[in-house]
Amino acid sequence: MFESLNEKLEKSFKILKGQGKITEINIAETLKEVRRSLLDADVNFKIAKDFTNRVKEKALGQEVLTAVKPGQLMVKIVHDELAQLMGGEAENINLQGEPAIILMAGLQGSGKTTFSGKLANRLKQKEKKNPLLVACDIYRPAAIDQLKVVGEQINVPVYAEPENKNAVKIAEAAIKHAKANGHDVVIVDTAGRLAIDQDMMDEIAAVKKAINPSEILFVVDSMTGQDAVNTAKAFNDLLNFDGVILTKLDGDTRGGAALSIREVVQKPIKFVGTGEKMEALDVFHPSRMADRILGMGDIVSLVEKAQEQFDEEEAKRLQKKLAKDQFSFNDFLKQIQQIKKMGNIKDLASMIPGVGKALKDVDIDDDAFKGIEAIIYSMTPAEREDPTLLSGSRRRRIADGSGTSIQEVNRLIKQFGETRKMMKMISGGGNMRGMMGKMK
Ligand code: GDP
View (cartoon, rainbow, N blue to C red):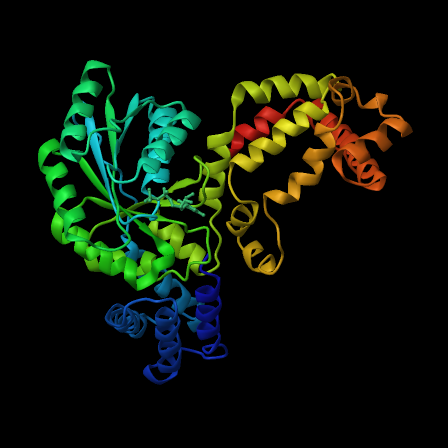
């Protein structure tokens, strides 16, 4: 995420290396490079210019502190200005109303349906809500099916009327249905087009008027850069939406949309989508995003993610098994699945300061676990529970079954044995839960 911007900004700070203090002359070059980095990231020209002007003013206005080098000071100033540009504080969505009504707007393919599912999932899991998803895309039958698939995945009901061609009527009926069935949040997924189109705009405006949503969220693909900003402006002029959702931030986005959207529409970015899975949703924290852009890592988000996936009951159960030396390949598999649920491994790693850059050219993704999983899946249930059964001939069979080599199987079994020994030692100390507790 934002790798190229990060690299360029870093280069621009290096220019100040060896300077004793900041002067108008010696920061001129740095500021030029900062501006160029922003433009390359597809930030709008005026925003980039205003940004560097603000940085310049701040930098020249700073008292000279001998303890802080000019380069470090610039990093801090740019960091704070980036955070300010993206919105200052994280903002919540408004869930008032019985039911609360959330309307999704955005172009086709921006990620509305996926995000509707992610949000429903989050509200259900974290806020114990009982959401209803509503399919208001009356043009593409596939869109209704897609929302149904999403609903099934997260176990949230979907309201649809495949024969009805009136989006307003469907939305109204859905809200009646929600009231009658005890749903406290209704998430309305609407039709998108490939580009701004008057019919689509009229329709969503009519839906808004009819159902009076408590929150309108504009969903936009962050890969589309300045186009994203133009689309946001058109939708905001029409709908006066409440917040922006930036999707596909896990992709190779240059960052322009994330950096410019708020300044242009004066609405906060509330969530970011970081993958296709239902869990790949993060609250948008401007300051933490600025950390990431500057390669400072994002330990806070990483810890929060770990906490979200951390299951206290499961930890207790594991601890008992560890103490009794019963930790099995099945438990191991579960642990891998938990890690995978946290999202793309490389993205996770990039939240650790310094690690992101080190891994820039290393290819790691979920596939990193594929071989291990294949090997474990090729074991019989008895073998998974009791690794001592794994004789030479069984190992051969497992290698054949999983499409790996006997060496890989041996290596995994050996590593597993060592991990088990080490974990037993830790849990023998009796304090794994204590350790995890401290993370909170
Ligand atoms: P809609 O037409 O606005 O409803 O968009 P969809 O929800 O169908 O999303 C379009 C495509 O983008 C689908 O293939 C999604 O899986 C994918 N997608 C959505 N959000 C994300 C995201 O945050 N990251 C990635 N990598 N893909 C996403």
